[in-house]
Image 1 (cartoon, rainbow, N blue to C red):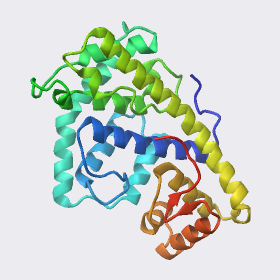
Image 2: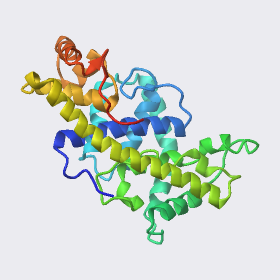
Image 3: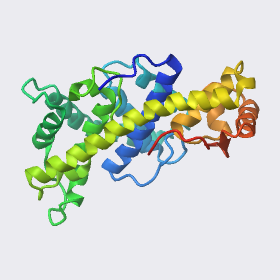
Length: 282
């Protein structure tokens, strides 16, 4: 599968931010986190901070579009309180060894080259159950599924799918770790997750191009206002933002951010900070 290497710089940044948000939603599902739907929101600061730190640990280099996306979210979101920061550090400390184990198996030289077979082999080697054995699905809450999905965002090349540049959150789900499934059931589940993730990756690339075209066609008079375009890309990536979040993300005043929102609403691109233009599937 191709990469996004030929993308303009600002669209690469937008795509990375969009996939960081996708990765957060997948992380919440993998680790049974019910709160914090908005990545840059005020709630769930402990878990979000731990998630961002784990993404940084998983990155080969922080000097990358995904590393920049992590830094931007930290700028936009309200910082965790002292106690929340301590709790976040505890989550990271308890998760680090799991992430390192997943990294180890992902770099195993004897893994199959075929992406599906490769992923199935990795899941088999990492599969364990550490929960209520009477409920095979609930038991998967303690699996390293979350770690594989983080690595699919930060080191997608290791999965044998792309030479680099793609982000693949949701490449596997917790059901693939069920202890009561046969090999064929597990393979079918992984195949569905992989196919859905690849389709979504292609859709996201098309969506970024569509977002740029939508801004050009509806906001031609704002072309010289890079802040309006930057704000639109932020909303495209994260699905909806407040004036306060935009002001922090763009280092603008809250009044200036409010003016930009009004301009984008007047152009029909957003309503209440949420994009009206189709920007890809969820």
